Structure formats: C-alpha cells, structure tokens
Image 1 (cartoon, rainbow, N blue to C red):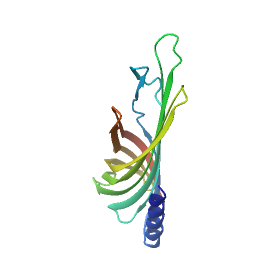
Image 2: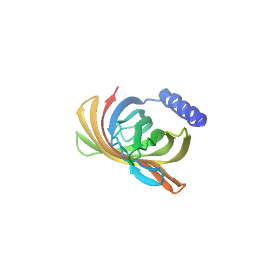
Image 3: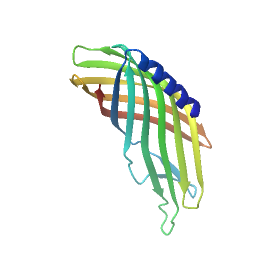
Image 4: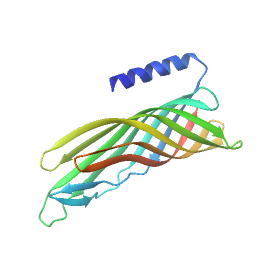
Length: 186
C-alpha cells in the first residue's frame, strides 16, 4: 500500500510539472449484494449500503489522463433467519485505484472513455461471535463509460468499472460497479 501511495505521489508531482489540467469527481455506485454463510445456511444481506467513489486526475492531453480514486462501497449485514438465533455477520468493502484514462469525443458534448489500471481492494468481515478478518488484494482494474459535457467545467458520467475479484474458502467476491456521477475540471 505504501509503495502504491509513493508511486502515485511521484507520478502526480512529476505530472504537475508539465501542462496538465486537474479534475475531481464524485460517483454514486450500485451497492451490490452479499451472501453469508450463517450456521451452515446461505443468507442474503439485510440492507443495501450506499456506495460512493471519489477521484482526482490530471488531463495531460484531450485524450489521456491519469487518475487516482477511492471507493467506499459500504457494509452489508445479515442476520440468521432461524427464530431465536442472534447470529449476525457483516462485510465492508472499499477500493483505492490508480489508472490511465483514455477518451474519444463523440461530437461537442459527448465522449466515450475507458479506464485501465490497478486496484487495491479491502474487505473487512466480522460476526456476532467475535470473529473478524481483514483482507486486501490487488487486481487489474478496467472500465469505461460515457461523459456528457454540461458546461465547460462540469460533466456528468455514466460508467461501469470492474475493480477485481477473488476466490477462496468456498466463496467468491467480485468488486464491480455501475456508477453515475459528476466531474469538475479546473
């Protein structure tokens, strides 16, 4: 994680020495679903957490940018449906990513864009029995979407991003999101 931070900081400082236009954005993302194994039963989550992504980037050319982002994708909760049972489970996820973003205009107001990079996914699980576990895994990131220029400095985006997945212990976790948001250029 420290190496990713150092590489990102170095890249952003080096890039700022050249002519680059900064931008920031905020996206609302689909929360996704989680299934838990509680007392040997497969149980769906009780809630639909809010999922948000914040990002900042440097636009080097009209077609290419470098981007750093953080997604707080919420916590899923589940309760054992058996009457009298108080067993509960919780899973929280987040992501930090560094990516290159390429775009191509579709007229004056619209552009298609793609994103390719690396994502550090973080998971935190706990249950009512006092067990807890944290896990981080690094995976390739890919995604893309459509940008609509609302004003010279403001754009709306619709996009899909796949932040990675992992398998193990009889389960699979996939971090993929459909997102809508706003980007502000300086």
